[in-house]
Amino acid sequence: MRNPDLPSPVQQIPWDHDITIHVKRDDLLHPVYGGNKWRKLKYNLSAMRERGTGHIVTFGGPFSNHIHAVAGISRDQGLQATMYLRGPFDDPANPVLQFVRQAGAHLIMLSRAEYARRRDVDFLDDLKVRHPDAWIIPEGGTNTLAIRGCAEIVAEVEQQLGYLPDHWVVAGGTGGTAAGIAQGLAGRAQLHVITAVPKKLFIPTFFEAMSWTKGTVPRRITVDDGFHLGGLGRWDDELISRILKTEAAHAVPLDPVYTG
Image (tube, rainbow, N blue to C red; front, top):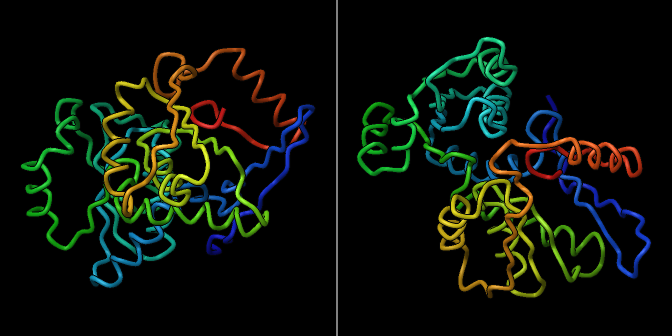
């Protein structure tokens, strides 16, 4: 399997109004672990190598892009991976879980109550006892090293275009990618975060991610939670129609959970 192709291309989208739209095609970085997942994991993998460990422990839901990416990277780089998943049911027909198993990762299903404790200090201390050699990565991959990787998006775009766009728009789940872009922008442009979850769920994790940004990041940021349709992974016929029209018109694939 090839390594990710950096930098990812920037594609201009024709528009009728007096603005120019570009799309940063991180989906083309890699067929299995492209997008923001590679950027979040890039420096985590470097830190693992420096520490001399080859075991990743992480968390996710049963359809998580993060656990899919970690499983693919672990397979390709000969790493051990242990996944703690939000259960309680293990669906054998789930394509993500099928891939994760085929990649050789070890799955541990948790009840929703157990999974809700994944950020608790005592839970994490217990994980360190059970996996003393492991590198623990949070749900979604968001930590200080992930933010460092995502911040590089800004420098890439600025170099590719020869200027810094005035407005940046990004989907938000845990807020790590948005925090990284905010760090890279350092207040030089407006960042618009469109959340994939209700704002009451997004804001705490986003504020935590923002607290890890290097130095003081000027807050030229807006957060809009008007498009998640009630929660993560929900969509309707209108959204699917818009996604299909965009892909047909511009050959830009969108997904119904985040970028759509």
